[in-house]
Image (tube, rainbow, N blue to C red; front, side, top):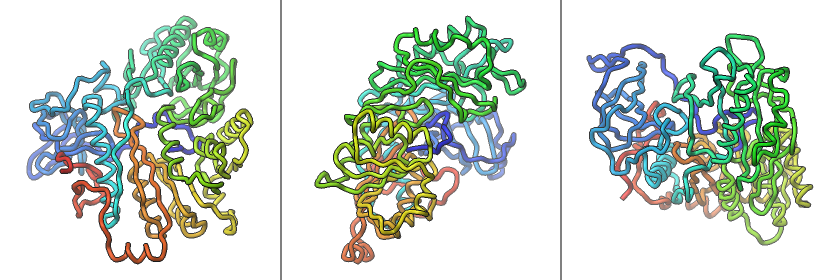
Length: 525
């Protein structure tokens, strides 16, 4: 996934479906109330990360459950269509239930699956992809490959973003590093985070100590006074370099004077920056980032290329996973001769630049000017030619691209919402590349894109899910599609054999309502 130019606070947190909250709801003559304790049997998982159960037919999204378990849960919210609950006691545990590694699990909203054995997490993620795509593409062969996991699912997040909160009198002498609670704007004080890169997390805590000593003011939505909002640390995949970004409502905070020199003395810190976000309520970083000291870009090594990445440009949060995505994309592009490749939503050139280094001709289209500048600097520093960056919105580029311009391969790495329908149609019906590689972080958006591509004359060759964020429901997929020949089109219209194997995990009549995109507790035979 490559998000829009607007930076994302937490890529593993998805917007939740909304329902009007209330204190009670009547279901089949029975009253379900907030605070009520109920016995439930967990029967499925959802893309939002919760398990799912039904109480007299009423849907409850349940935090902390595993399909097949019997639990006692406390109802947290209720609405007309569904409610939320959290497990308070497991009366019949699943064999795959494990003790969470983090002491904040259950209160912090960063990880929802630490109670599930990692191999089982991979199973449910693969099944979520299958159920979501089968619901949308019921007559299509789905060659879904086994989920690719991470050898060690701990310490993998190289982007660390802590909100700073003073639970005292508005000064950082009492500052705490926090994450948001699950489904809440409230913050949870965090003393440890085992999914963070350990080196980056230690840097954040040393920065916290300095900020406390300097008594730096904390931003508040109830005051217009300037203050600090959060601390962001980005650590290179090898753990040898880190950049610190302070996010504040103003660059005129006297107490921050000298922060850059102090932070550069922290082992591993090679760059310090200040981001200005004037909206104290926003969870996004601001548009303006000021370089303060050290190196202006972080060095990331992926696929034999040294990437030069600005602190506010997007790069995959795990260098290991970025390398896995790159290898999958490279696998789908023939290494015979020079291929003409169009890389849409290219970011800093994670795919474009290594492909150009391999001798292909690449056009990389990216809206974010800083990402484009980083990509061009990476080309210069690595002395790589054959890649042309175009700073443009993808939609605007596609509107103006000459139909005479031919690409053998189009790479799509769209935002979470996927591509606009008409953009996909222009690619498939106007550019008509031989192959399309879709890199998606949202199975629902992927299903929509695949439906249009299939209708436009393409067939799915391979769907490879990849785990980018262990202990969450976040799923990345790399899908290869090829343009159908006339004979292949006749065969596909006459039916064909289902691909991908496995037992159907979504019901043919399932509708797009809360609880959709769930998987049943029985594994494929």
